[in-house]
Image (tube, rainbow, N blue to C red; front, side, top):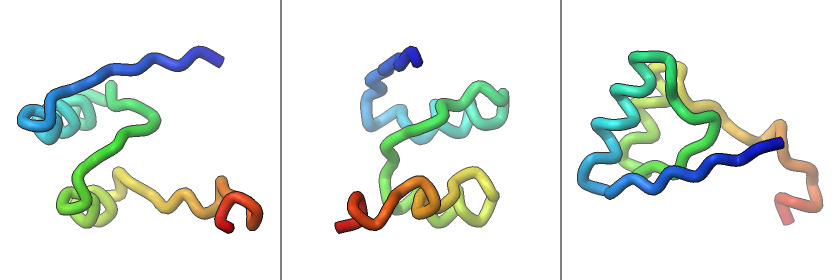
Length: 59
């Protein structure tokens, strides 16, 4: 597995995310502002990660 990290300044992050999503080049995982999360969930872009976590991880 190869991981590529890209650090994006906060003030351009939303624009980069929406541009990448529209182009189909978005990352598999991203840290985003919580105020954007509801919009991304409603658009079917973001999804819960619960199914990827076992009980031990959830604490």
